[in-house]
Length: 306
Image (tube, rainbow, N blue to C red):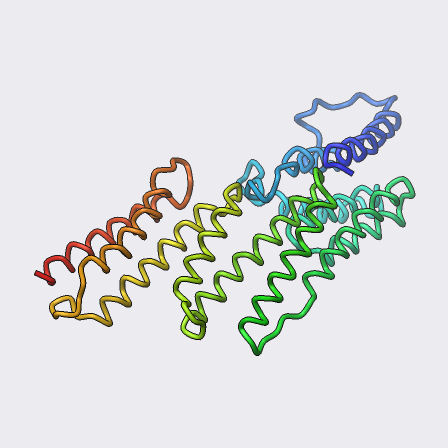
């Protein structure tokens, strides 16, 4: 079921809650909206629905008006609601909790609350069942063990997990689970590059494999919210090659080649500059600092190499 359909379905249930509440208060004068309790379930779920529709692969988890992660804030508000109104609208509470937990990648918790929602209200049973099926498929991939002995067997295992996530992505296209699966696939792709970077001296042409891995990661995940982080990490790898070259070749000696040094430095600067030119991102200041540091190191090496 698409995110929009899910939102409408839950919205209908919330509308029913509102009608029941109004019916129970028909003989009473209703206070103005600003005097109603902030912890009302309608407000909690309405705020959550409004903020929880983003594609979490492309965009970070949204913040509530106080600047807190909306998924965490919703769980806290629902816990507070349950303390004050024990047992009321348990199906809605469980279903909303499940949606928050799955967006936090707490799939065991999400499955448990979907099951509770299905028991509380048959109207949510079918949808909760479909969601449980998707999350159990997630768990099956996540729990598949990886080889810890052979680095190439480990990489093969990661590739198999990527293939499995691709199958999930295609199965759940245009639903929230497509985006969740893209997040999981992306984490495997990043883990693969990190593993190659840690083991580059154990593999033939290790540095080139890492460079290829970063290039593929950035090309594949151009739409990810983490793109600028990956660009900085790629730049940092070139900066590491710069420092290693300086340690292995005395800049005042005859073995130091300023052109080889410069190629690594220019590659790092190019990646840092791509990030520094983007306004409104947290990584911009970090990138600017790295540019200044690399320029300073380059100037120092040129002077020492004369």
